[in-house]
Image (cartoon, rainbow, N blue to C red; front, side):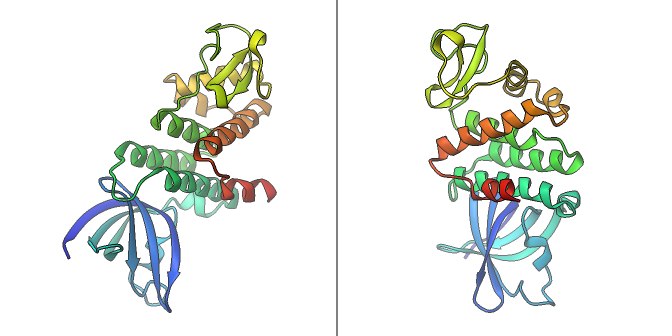
Length: 238
């Protein structure tokens, strides 16, 4: 087995045997990596607490045939403010779940890695309502499915965008309305998120149109993934 260094975000964990865990990471250079962390469920574990979602960690691993083995883990960012706020932690977990569904095992996806780390840092630094939907929309763009939000996805009209037909590519004008209605305020914010003005969009306070975007971005990503995000459903029930 070869030894290697890597950086990664803990996406999720599973119990293994009496004291071990399988940890799934989104890594900087190797995409999704699943590794065994031996003895981390013991109270005297050297690094068990460092390998809980959504920790960002520096790792030393042995490469295995199916599962790697964690031999060392040092915390880069524990995202303490997220751990102290159940709702924010739940929203962070929804981003981890989305990344887990998108990234492929041992296929580098450095842009997704950087996006996830940045989104977690943003959510930890300020409780803004648009971090998660913006991340979902950016993931769609990264996957090659950027929603058309600057003009009607059917005719190209730039004015009077009134509905969200994500299955057909994005926003629709009043003449070609399809899908759920969307407010003019939400249209403007969507254009900021996907048009290079993300920082401005993240300054939006909670409002009906930020809730709109949250719902629509979630539905768009779920449509792309062809599955429901369980963490989102749990958050909405709480």
